Length: 136
Image (cartoon, rainbow, N blue to C red; front, top):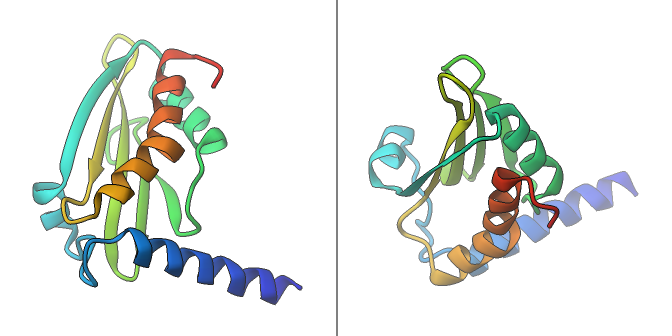
């Protein structure tokens, strides 16, 4: 049963990425190029980076290859969706001096519109609620 579930999860991930990606080369392989080429939006919140990241991790609909990492800055957290050697999306939760956080969303620029719609539905709206402290 455990093996079937694992194979099912992999199958769902492959299907989801294939259906949403713009081309077989969707996502960005080189992390430095991802930093330069990804579309980005930056927001600020009065809530702490840790609180927003914890809320997001608990409430968002995440794909199986999603990871949460400690960032290079003190207290920073990074959510990343990377599969098949390519990065598709990333969110950086960075503490602000004096309180609050800066939240930067980066999404690979070569994805279909359906990917962006799925992000907004499954992760973006949850992120917004977590940043304001709303119960979504």
